[in-house]
Image (cartoon, rainbow, N blue to C red; front, side):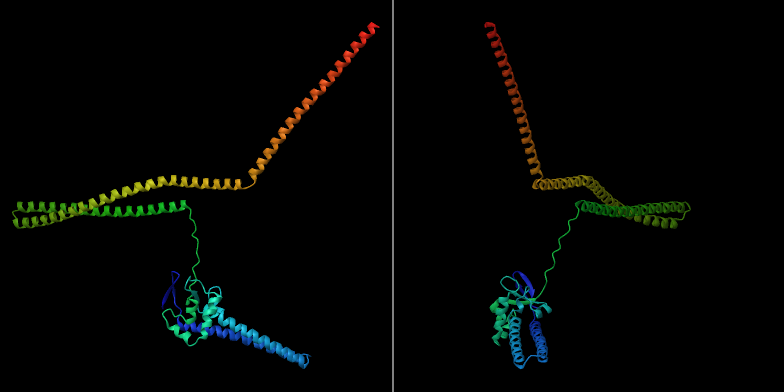
Length: 363
């Protein structure tokens, strides 16, 4: 299988045989549609013959149907042969069934109806058109003119948006995993401690055996059995050598256990610190989440007409209060003016009465 790179993407070239099969499928489908149309028109002609039409009318109807059939067949073959590969994905019916696709070399997009017409129209230049088909890119002369290439169709995978996971759950899962790893490490340290205890027991047992053979050598010497004493001392020396080997292994294992214990204690401290920080991190995350939520709510409220309505109501209420106060002040001034007018009237009447009394007294 040959490959070709188009617009930065690598595609598999369609084989020559597969492309030929796709062309035969298109031709067979077009022929089948034309045959079905011919059968339907034959049925119509039969019904026209059975009817009460006269011969002239019948011949005229058959002639019209024949012309229509010819025009429809011509349009069908022209479209099927020259434009069928210009559909949305550069696939005619045959290429779609065989998972082929015609792409443009300049941008990697499916060929258009114009490209499909150019590449198929060049097919009239046979056999020159097929000779170009033997090239490296397996392009016919029409593909050269249209700057296209036929490849295996590979549908693009659907982009699945990753689900956003709750950070708190991620943190809890990470801490749980750390706890499991710490538990496994503790088990391994316990196993190392068990090995250390085995070396210690083996060392102490070898020392005890050496002392026992030492005692037996003393008893043999007291019994004047040097031969037995010599054998007992040989056994004592073997156990002492074995004890030294066990002691060396015990000391090495002890160092390993000490290092593992220190590392385990360090991990335990880190685990404790992590669990302590978890509360603070969760609290900060919730605070940020709450602040973001409140800011979004404030933005939504500010974007709505609530504040505008409240502001207008406040302005209306202020204007109403101002008008009421002004009206009250005007009313007070009006009442004061009325009282002054009444007082002035009373004063004027009193002056007239005084003048009248003085005039009477003179007369």
